[in-house]
Amino acid sequence: MFEATTNQIRIHVVPAYVPDQSDPDQNQYFFSYTIEIHNGGKHSVQLVSRHWIITDAHGRMEEVQGPGVVGQQPTLEPGESFQYSSFCPLTTPTGSMEGTFLMMSGKGEKFEVKIPKFILVEPAQYH
Image (cartoon, rainbow, N blue to C red; front, side):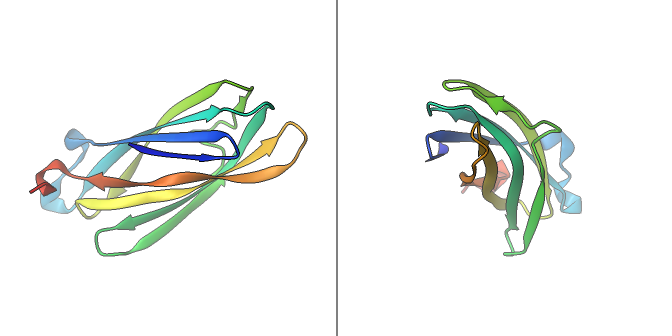
């Protein structure tokens, strides 16, 4: 399980390999991931932006930054959760992702929430 909690905001990640979108003979590996964001705090928070660090099996890193997630900047009231799915193509059969979400409290204070490092693995790589 890939999970982290920062300032009472819990991030839970479930990655998966997508074989029908992948072509190992062409070094194309496609992964999906589902993220659940849960506000365990006492105040509303809004997801403002994301910052990803994607690393392939050769140690090559790519950073991705942008507003919101999947075109949204959700606001979560206390006890609420937001879930979304996205994808990551790699040229290697394994890799990892990690990063942060920039959140804003109902009072306008901004803070970062850790996205736990999670592993992307094509199933044939298991020995």
